[in-house]
Amino acid sequence: MIAAINRAALPYLITGVLLVAAAGLSFLAVSKVGAMVDDAAASARAERDAHWAAEIERTNAHAARRIADQARDALRIETAANERIRASEQEQVELEKKNAALPDGGACGLDHGRVRLLAR
Image (tube, rainbow, N blue to C red; front, side):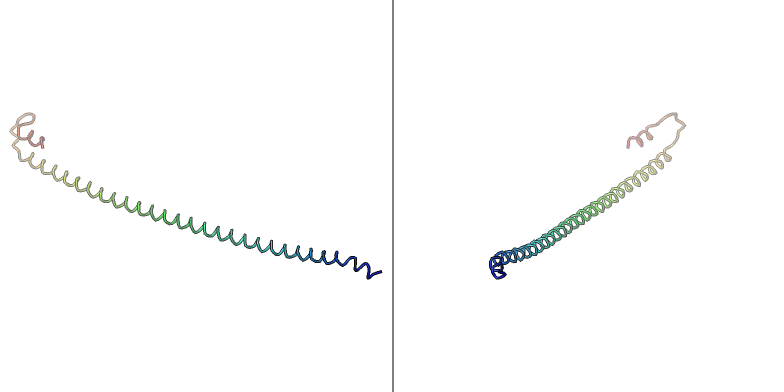
């Protein structure tokens, strides 16, 4: 009797064992695929972060170059302006000397010599 039950149940037992083995292997395969997906996602995030870090560094370097160029241009403009101011001050000093050298003559208003100084 037990031998008959065993014979009748043997295909079901083998099928059950094969199903359990298949389920176990499927679970292992899914966990391995999940691990590979996680690794790929982490790698993609690292690449993306590296790309944007390099992009930010490049942009910061470009901004620093532009700031340095602007500072250099401002210094050049300031130097030129100071030279023009010094030249104007020197010209004013010369005009004052020439004006002081002109005779006063007791005249009221501007005489011909002073008008010539103003025309410059």
